[in-house]
Image (tube, rainbow, N blue to C red; front, top):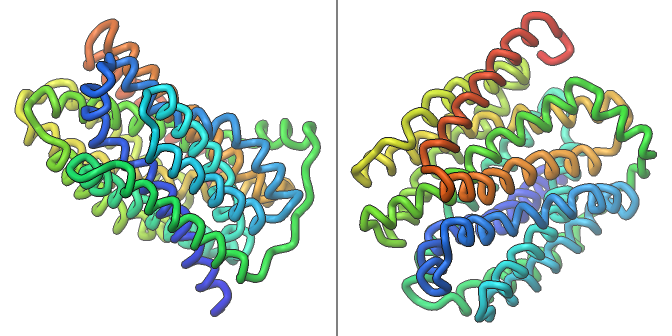
Length: 384
């Protein structure tokens, strides 16, 4: 039990640090927009570089987690993240910034596949949702700290701020090397992976991870740029995302526990209903306080999708005999597809039309998914 607690703390620290670097971009987007004269599309590309790297790295690092073992994969991811942090700290062009964010996304694919699979493989099945929810709570706490860090970097200097993240990544890698490694689970064949995608728990889990990725990717680009237009500075933007993530951090472990007791789909339906309503409201605020309120509400409500969808995917992989490293590779894949499309695709669509169009399309997507899931909950016991 003590070893499990140490492992959970380590995994929480890894995902916290990774999401801190990722979320630090939110209040910095207006700064880089001004410094490099970026369009909304250019800002979207910068925001999407990280999830694009995760998309490319998801399956290769899932394979390595199964072949090398989860500890080695997590350590590699941490060291690569540190290198990307140092590069981001000294980058003096938008091309270098995009490249550093892309490499950090690759690193995130490795560290998340290693850390999350390490926890899921060690946790008892009846507490898996709770353990994943706790780890996700730490990730969300990183999303909480990230905007504050970005606001600090905008107010002080970017180089020392992000260099410090690189140093912390190296320290965590050293701590991980002192932990007892889990035995590699072994790789799966391409045929087994394709069969896994046909399983309703795996495919459903991936989709339910992609949906909040789409939503938060869109909000993460369009909302800070809109707040900047309304005269809000980086410090206030950072504070808004900090408050949102603070609420989501407290909710995530509770949602994981509910999914263990009430089934994986029950909390997902709540998140989808919230997404349907909130996306209808996002295009219309003309006052900064109203948009900030929506951001703060969206995080804990739509964030109820994360823990149960990941646990559902993990359950399906276990039932099929697929390594947990691959399960979280598929989780990374679902998130990165959603986040990349949300950040870059929604920004491009907003440039061509207006901010209302991507928000309203996402409302329809959440509603359609809610209806399909509600029917599945009645007719497919395996998903509950």
